[in-house]
Amino acid sequence: MSGSEETPKPPEPSGVDLARVALRAAKEAARARGEATQQQKRARRGGGLRSGAPPGRDPMPLGPAINRLITERGWETPAAVGGVMGRWPQIVGDDLARKCVPERYDEDERVLHVRCDSTAWATNVRLLAPQLVARLNEDLGHGTVRLLKVHGPGGSARRYGPLRAPGSTGPGDTYG
Image 1: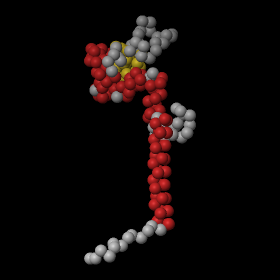
Image 2: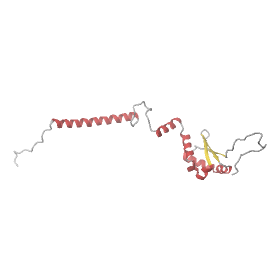
Image 3: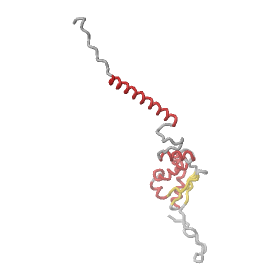
Image 4: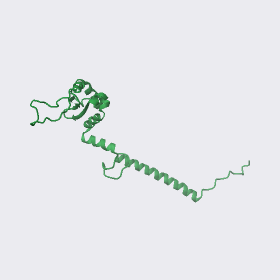
């Protein structure tokens, strides 16, 4: 080829092509600015989408709301013990769970009160109390339950009246 031939030059971009390129660049720059602004807002607000309400007043899912309430009120231990009462059969075993149930937890003294349906089972649970306290503390955290107080079956209230035999104690025990 001779030196007089030149390679053809690409055509000059038209005004429409230049406008498209400028528009695309402007959109990308705006998107980048918007993403940066959103990240800054999330960082200031603590993350996540917000409604624009004052801090701490945004709606939140029920689970985190309950966990926050439990923490703010200092109810961690009673809530944990309540969970144990719900899982009583898994902790103590099905046989024992059928014969005795947890009634209440005294947080000040760290005592769990358990009621058995017969005096024989109450005696058996009293003998098992150290192992049960250890198992409960494994689940709840060391020192949460200090003592297991075992109660026998609750009879009806003693009624006094003209048709009662003197000296009769009534249903004070199940003998079972």
